[in-house]
Length: 221
Ligand code: DC
Image (cartoon, rainbow, N blue to C red):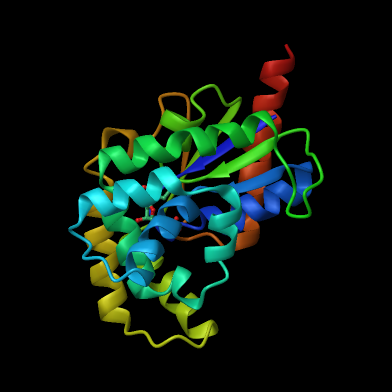
């Protein structure tokens, strides 16, 4: 089984994907990690974010183990890391270079401990349109910019990172503009769209399970 969860930044895709992966015994691929890895290579190597050639080179050189190694760096999910990821993600050749690695995972999905899984759940804004266009189940999760900024702000605080709500909101709006200028960031035609602004994590999870069970019944017919 292949499930994709698309949607804007901080809409709750990751939390939902993790819970669904546990419930359905699926391997989980957080595709934002590939862009964060390239963004972090730029920061670690002191490259200017406008250096498109360097970003493309890091994207072509990126391997799954290197991405996992970079994900341990505290800057991986920091504000600077998020900005760098958003910038490199807007470069078409970077996206092209990172596509194969993301698609390969669905052919051989593995859990975090390296053991094989019988399916995968992908989280990322173009997973239903570009990365896994043939996925059986596609969800598009969204929420208002204010709600998403609040969620991201709380995440930073929980991690002990320095953050300012207004700055996080501004960054959320800027990232939406950057990310949604791409056709691939819009919902897939066969995606189920739901707004999580007024829902708790448990309510979002229950609704997603309901959608998946209905879709499974349709597929079994
Ligand atoms: O989901 P995230 O915040 O970790 O994503 C980091 C950046 O990568 C964000 O700016 C959106 C971008 N991204 C993307 O363009 N396509 C994806 N499939 C996943 C993330």
